[in-house]
Every structure is written in C-alpha cells, then in structure tokens.
Length: 176
Image (cartoon, rainbow, N blue to C red; front, side, top):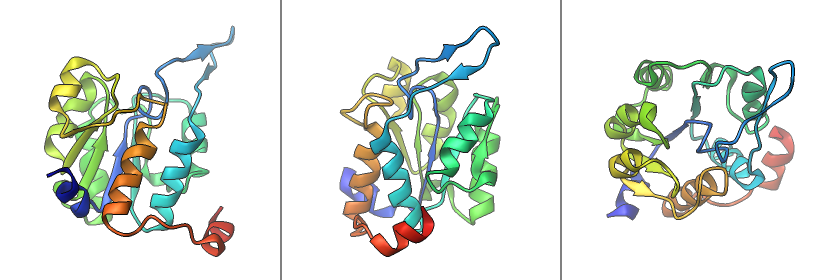
C-alpha cells in the first residue's frame, strides 16, 4: 500500500521544528534562535525541487533564517509560511498556488498543530520520534527521527517509486 501512495504524490510540505530539525532550539542573550538542519534532508529537498515537485514549508517559527535556509534548498520564497498558527489555511494556499488537490500533497508533521493537515493531505508523514497523536494520524512513519534523516528517507522513497531519483549534475550546477 505504501508504494501506491508514494506513486501519486505531486508535492511536499513540511513543518520545521521536529521534522527538518531535531526540535532543539538554541537562543543567545539577544533572543536570536538557532536551529540545526540535517544536510541529507536538505539535499532531499533539492532533489525534489529539481524534479519539479513543489515544496512548501509551513512552520510556527518566525525567524527569517528559516526562509533563508530553505531558499538554498530550492524552495520558492512564497512557499515558506512563517508564523503559521492555522496550518490548514497555509496548506490550502500552497495547494491553490500550485493547482494541487489536497490528495496530491505529502505533509510531514510531528506535533499537535500538524495533525489537521496530516489527516487531510494525500499522505501524512511523521518522524519516528513524533508525539503519539501525530504517529497515530500518520499514513507513514519514517524509521528516522526528525532532523535525522526522516525527510530524506521519505522523499527518496517517493521519488524512487516514481522513477525520479537521479541527479542531473548540469541542472544541479545551474540551480544550486
């Protein structure tokens, strides 16, 4: 069943903290926040972008550093939703912007604010260390933890199921 779902996906959308990071946030005395991202997860986003998959970021985080990080992964600036308090609204906007049906999108989430989108999208994904409610809501649970390869694991599986997992070096050099 899992491979059948993976073959129908046309776009990806992600929460950030706990999915593309391990959930840890460092803060300096000025209140500036710092996150650590997995480079292999980032390369998975680049591969998806180069293959023509729309990629969205829907996060409660407000730091412009989040936007800057994902621009380096091929995510369009208008597809980075910062300060999201109703992820359904931002998910709908992402779908509308790209002419997608909800069932075309794979959404990755790890906590309670993600569940409404996880249950309405085509395939809800949770990292192995997500909260119990998100694990229960997920259609697929990655064996990898958030910020530790869950994005790469799943994006790669989708792209391989669709025959799209290959690196075009000339396009990579041109785009990145």
